[in-house]
Amino acid sequence: MRIDFELANRDDTKKIINVQNQSFYDDYNKYGECPAYNETEQAMLKQIEEARVYKILKYNEIIGDIIIKQRENNNFYLRVISIIPQYQNLGIGQMALKYIEEVYPEASEWELITPFKSYRNHHFYEKMGYVKVEEYKHSDILTMFRYKKKMLR
Image (tube, rainbow, N blue to C red):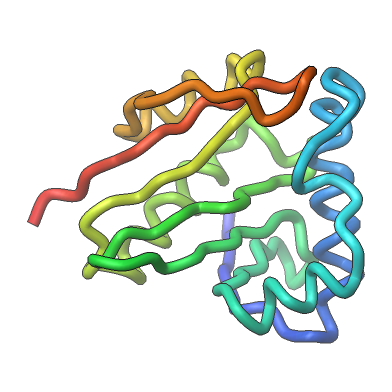
């Protein structure tokens, strides 16, 4: 299966919001909230302008996205990795993580957060070399797990 990754632009805003809504709908229903669900166009435009937002493409159709923020000391924060449900469990997430690690070889560490009951996410990230380093209360109803991956140089 051929999957491509391209930087997003302003014209992709609505499509990326739609992809994230499809991808995070179950989390939103499960918890009653999800930080990447139902983002406003203004918030997504800000991400596209200030972070690095990648489209995940299959036959030029956006089926997912990746949002990355660079922090100090070559640490990177993976704010979002989303894939619409019909393309999940096909190895695309693994391709996406490998892609960003290749594109950012200067990264000394990757960090991300995921909900405490997202067991598939936990398994996936741990399989990809991430280690759970913290649990914290995001809100009264949502606890998040923080994962990190130190890169070998």
